[in-house]
Length: 191
Length: 302
Image (cartoon, rainbow over all chains, first blue to last red; front, side, top):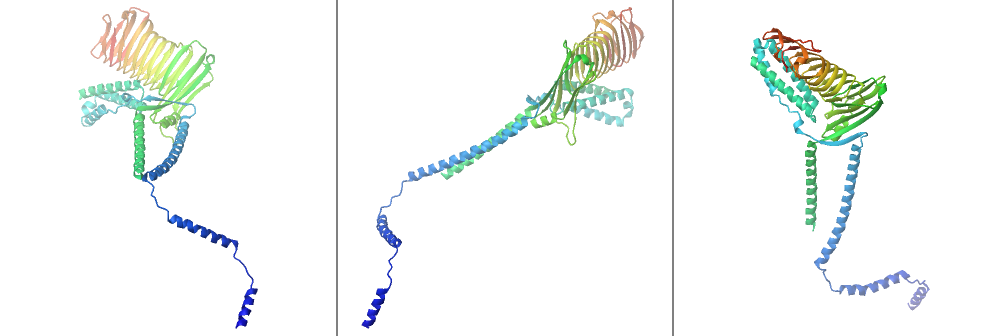
């Protein structure tokens, strides 16, 4: 038995010896150093910051956000203004065309007064039933005159269009309308 | 804090929306009371010595012809379109075409509307304005509708056709053929051989001299002859004719009327005087003769 022990000792003694690498020792050393630090940290007292500190931090954060929004807004305005400017300059840059503005005078716009024509239509309808008077030469002359004036009034209204600026055309239109009324009155007297 | 931010954002959006609505509303109201006027100007100058007649064929134009001493004709043609919408005005202006060119001894000016395929009728108020300076001895042939015509100091041939126009002629000499439908014509100091044909036009002729012929249908005609009148012939149908003289006896008269209301100064002799037909004359072998023939309407000499 003792002999075996000796053999074992000899064999063990013959075994190659190898130490742990430096890295292992460094790690062990670091861990050993951390332990008192952690221990000390655990024993530190805990304090809550005052609420004004959080508010101050929050304000600073929102201001920087606001600044960013402003930049985006400014960029958007510039973009819109740029596109608008281009559009306006394109619109105004028609070659050889000058632009100006005039006020619309509502008094110069043609009024669609058809009272005289309505009365004339009534008279014509009457003539379809009562032919004696309407076949009269004078009556037919007046009827022809009325229709000439009616055509003239229509032509004037067409010339005035929707945006008339010519007082002369309005004057002529009112003269024709007055003449139409006179002719219609003469016709009415004959019935 | 977040709550404040949300309110602020909502307020900003609301303010922007309000601004947009206000601006658009204002623009809409503003544009309804404002006409955008698009104008194109054309200027031409031509040596007058080589031009015999100036032809103007205008539509809805204000035309001003002014005589001057220079031996050249200058033309300023301004074409315009009026519409509350600027783009429509500019687009409609493009539909007005013009001619300003010489052909042999004649010079032609014209404005007209030309619609290309697929183009709609212009909705703008379209107008043309001609300002022409020319030598007084240049002949003029002018047509216009729905506008105004002003002429001053011309001394050669004049041919005028004006429908629905307000025409003013001042100090015109030479020969003239003037036709008007509706509208008004006022002529002051006209002398030479002139013929007026009018339909529904109010004519006012002051200080007229020379040989004047008139054919009028409807309308009012007022004539004030000068001592230089050599002959006046009026054919009137359904018009109201008034002749005003300093001394009516300066002229010989021959008047034939049918169904006309007549007022003559005392001194006329009657060939026929019935309610419907009245023929009168006055003769003292004067240098000038006035011959008037009327149907319906009124005739007054004073």
